[in-house]
Amino acid sequence: MKVSITFPSVMYREGPGAVQRLIQGVDTLGFDELNVLDHVVMGYPAPGRSAPVYPPQMPILEALSLLSYAAAVTDRVGLSTSVLVLPQRQPVLAAKQLSTIDTLSNGRLRVGIGTGWQASEYHALDQHFGNRGRRVVEAVALMRECWSQPQLDFAGDFYTLSKMAMEPKPDRGRDIPVWIGGTAKPALRRVAEIGDGWMGMNFGHDLQRARQSIAIIQDHAAAMGRNPADIGLQMSVTPRRGGDAKRFYGSAGAMAEHAKALNQIGFEWLSINLVELFRAGFRSVDEMLEQLNRLQEALTGG
Image (cartoon, rainbow, N blue to C red; front, top):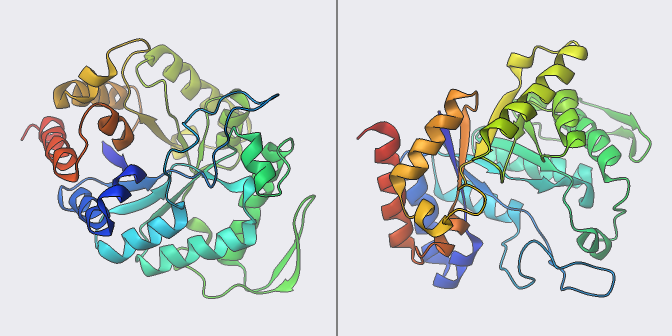
């Protein structure tokens, strides 16, 4: 079982020193990975636009900048996006940024990719929302070419390069792991088509739905000639829908018990969102690290 910890951008309010201390604490406690959310802007409710999933003024530090900072202040912990909304970014530039992070972190990067849900954010970044599913497949193919090919000649439906080069290459080249996020059936099919793994989220306590989603991915993979066992699986550790979230995240034992149940049905990666711990009352870096220490002890039997 591997555990990925989602960084809560709200902690920037305690200053850069606190951000560094929390990141280094996750590293020191022995968790496998630090992952970061990706949103550039968040919309207010407006005519013809429903309220966003998150409050419009929720602070979210820029994902790749934050990962670069995390790489510089840690030595061991893995680094990931969970997930990068790739179709609203220029993929050649994203490939360069991700390659640089992987190179300077000595190969600690895992790239989580998604299509996102917020049309207004796409519009703010001058990107088309309606074709994002098709564009993400092509963008991932283009990034892998950038990471591996000495000369880039790429002619897609959306992106084109001719006689270009991107250097330096990351040591792992196209083998930088790219995991696909999302829970809808098109996203699950993309996992089977292009993903090294699936980053599931938000329904971790629904084990039946989790099993069904795994089956969809594996059936599609087998139909495409891929070995389903080669596709990694991750799920977020969350309370039951309608359950007492504050009590759940306040109990290291409850989180560990649920993580172990998910691991037993095939999820080798589990994620813990520190934003939810913040909402549950762990408001300082010290409080978060103390709860994470209790969680690590519950997971390991220490």
